[in-house]
Structures are given as C-alpha cells and as structure tokens.
Amino acid sequence: MLVKAAVKIYKKKKKKGFYLEDIKKNLKKNNACYVLITCSPPSQDGKMNVELNYSGDENLASYLVDGAQDVFDSQMDGAKDNF
Image (cartoon, rainbow, N blue to C red; front, side):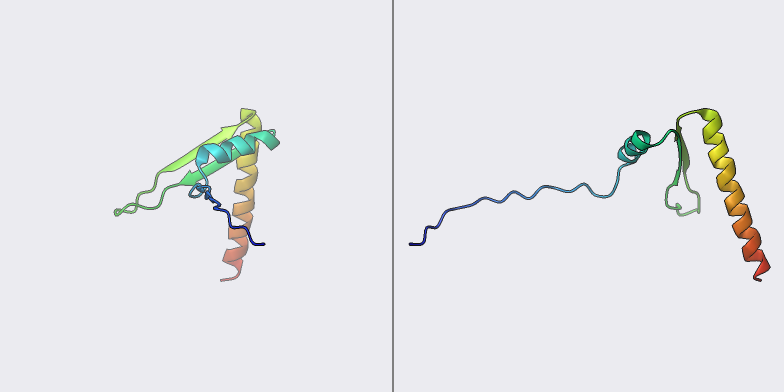
C-alpha cells in the first residue's frame, strides 16, 4: 500500500556574505585581542574608506599592528630583491 502525504519544505534564507558585526563578535570569542582592517571598493575617483577595528588591550593591538607591518616590510624587501 502506498500512502502519499503533502510535505512542506521551508528553505532557510541564507545571509549574503559575512557582516562586520558578526565577524567582530566571533573574533572576540576566541581571541585575547584582534585587529581588523577593512576597506570599501574604490569609488569612481579612486578613493576608498578604510576602517580599523580592534578589541582587547590597546598596547597588545598596537603590538599586533607593528608585527604585521614588519611582515609586510620584509615581504616587500624580498619582492624588491627579485626585480
């Protein structure tokens, strides 16, 4: 015997992309400190909005930024050597 029943399936709407507040909330959960730097796409005249967010100790956040700058500087020095 075959029984047919109407079943409604509801599709859960997905969020489009990540929202900055969600990212910051998740970073805050698992880290003593974080620094997040974001920028908008360039406008017609080439300008971009840059935003820096951090959470945690201000001195530690500064240390993270300085450390990241050192990494970029050494990578740029290495790239210059290849030309």
